[in-house]
Length: 265
Image 1 (tube, rainbow, N blue to C red):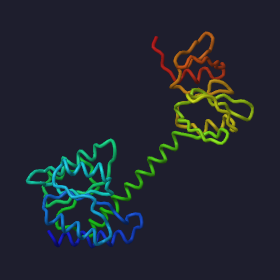
Image 2: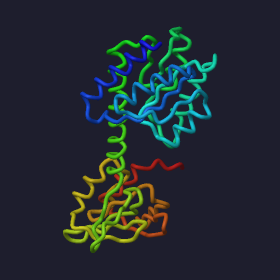
Image 3: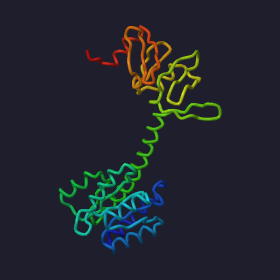
């Protein structure tokens, strides 16, 4: 076991030297063998990294995980003769607060155990003794996937929100909080939950920005958020929104607008 831990420390160190974003890791070790956990802590500390906690049971492991927010977790599947490591991983992977990458390190090689572990979505499953390249790649992929996930989440948030300049302030407006947008010359009026905003952007460009969202043109000068439609008066060609605003649609766009709905007769 000590040989395996030494291999772990050496190749983790080499991997970190090659990747700037992988330096100064905070590692949570979940291991029930006291001697092995101390050896791993000593090796990681010598490399300049921190073991933010060592636990040998679910209560302590989850407590450290939530408090310390480690960069990566190393989990031994068998804890005190039971597969408690898998149960801990299930809690981590189902957490709504944070989901940090984890790697199973185990001497178990049977298929049923692997299938149980796989269902918790680990970044890797390493058997003892560690394969050098496998361990190196597993560490790199764990942090790379974390970085990509954070970037994707940031991009998704930015795509669903825009900021409008008003005086010396930037006002955040979630796209789906917009009721409708109406053109006014070379400008556009945005009517939303936070009020009315005039922006220096033609309606055509606004619609391009809203591609993928549920906005439909109802006249040459207006687009409406379908989510906000409460009622349609077919006789008067009036759309009534959730806030009781009444907007007229023109005959030219009426058919296309009504195609968005499938009324029950």
